[in-house]
Length: 175
Image 1 (spheres, rainbow, N blue to C red):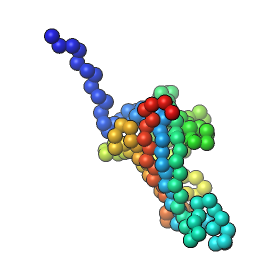
Image 2: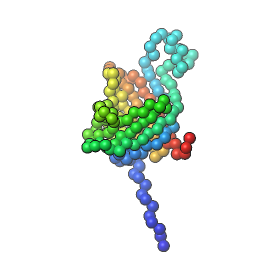
Image 3: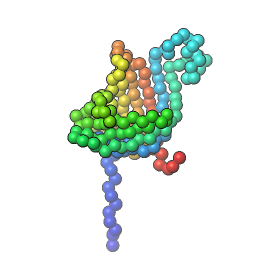
């Protein structure tokens, strides 16, 4: 005698945006490295007082640890594919919505923020613009509990102004 068959595991990597967003939900422990080829404002002596600067003046890079809380938001109307509420280590929460036409919106106000694209390799790309700069962020999973994110910000001249890489591990037990 055999028992019921186990439920099939969800497809990995996710093939649809709602499945990708649902996989993002959870508590994440992350390590982020940031790089900026631009010299911080001020002279070299002032730059050496920056907390991310060593005695040689390497203010162009920093690393930090943090925790993110991500909540999946169900679709809220025609054209909506759902959204995410992301709470930063500082306690600030931002809510973004994903539309079927590829637009990225502020959740409450439906204010345009940019565009999204789910690539065939299972990665999600977000493109936003603010203050004359374009930010391209790519998010992908190597395993259901290991998420990677990279971003590059381009200045108005098209050159890279800053970049970051983040590896995040899902917290599967209470802190």
